[in-house]
Each structure stands twice: as C-alpha cells, then as structure tokens.
Length: 117
Image 1 (cartoon, helix red, strand yellow):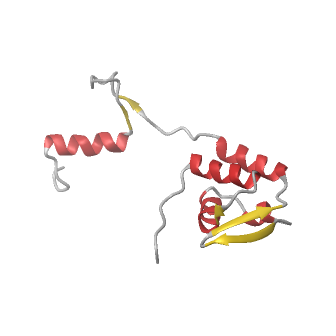
Image 2 (tube, one colour; image 1 turned 60 degrees about the vertical axis):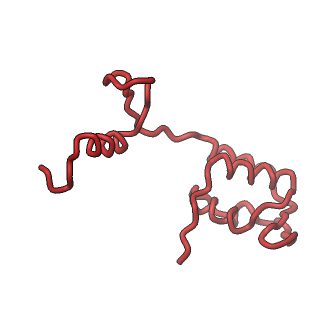
C-alpha cells in the first residue's frame, strides 16, 4: 500500500478555490484531502459534472457555492497545538517547540538512552 503525504490546510483551501473557479484540480488529492479532513466528498460533488482534462486533473462544474463555503469554513479553522514557550524556560530566540521535540532534544543533549531510568 502506498502511503500518501498529508495535504496541508492551505493546499486544500487552494483546491476549494479552484473548484469555485471551475479550474482543473488533481482528483486523487482532492479525495484524499476530503478524507483527511473528515469531509464527505459525495456532499461536495452531488450534482456536479466531471470532465477529465489530463492525467489526474479534472474539472467539476455545477458545484453549489454554498457547499464550498461550508467546506471552507470547516477547514479554515486553525487547530491550536500544544506549544511550550521556551523563552520562559531559558532557551534563546523565544523558541516555541512542542513538548515532544523538547524531549527528543533533551535526550540527545544529555545522552539518555531508552534503557536509562
């Protein structure tokens, strides 16, 4: 099974803009992004007419603008991730890294191994 790279939020918003303009979009990536963001592709393409352009590029005509707006609103919300303010802990440049990266960096810096308690 081939693993696909994640589609970024901004890339998916670009696909929605192209759908709105009835410009060609990569069909497989559009379907992958819809699954990734938990959206039903059938809701978007209901009543739309598909036209093959070349390779995996297709154009869809007749998509309801309201559905595209709903999808944009659902995807446009940036999800907050837990970050640690490293400047408060004494690290330079007001670095903001996740707790996982802090753990990985600490283990490398201090030479901890998986067997060390």
